[in-house]
Image (cartoon, rainbow, N blue to C red; front, side):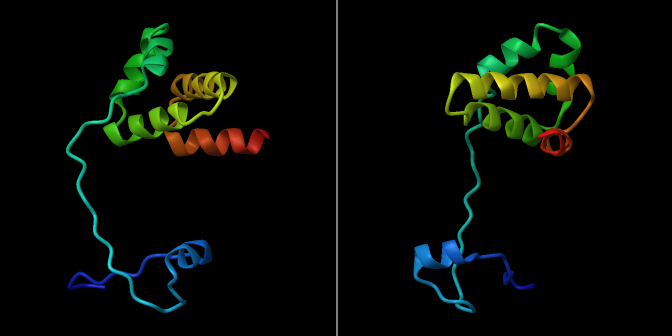
Amino acid sequence: MGDGDFIIPFNAQMRKGTGKQKGDSVLLQLDLEQEEKKISEDLLMCLAEVNENLERFLSLPKGHQNYYSNWVESAKTTSTKSDRIMKTIFAMEHEMDYGQMIRHFKNKS
């Protein structure tokens, strides 16, 4: 809260994992990533099938591109990865950002 002090959520699971109790202080160190993350090749290849989708994706801020790419690449099965790529394509066709797309499909399930 000024002078480098911040309040951040630290849930019960995190407290249990670190041995901290409610109200304890923690020291947090953040490191800036210097290495640029690569966008999923599979995602880019599928988006390129319709040039407008690829252009729209590439026009997103790099952080938003990374949200989509990380989400696609974190899929544990080929089926899930394919589904996530299709949802990303849908989002590009409907000019959705990552959060809008997630909310859209959450409401469909």
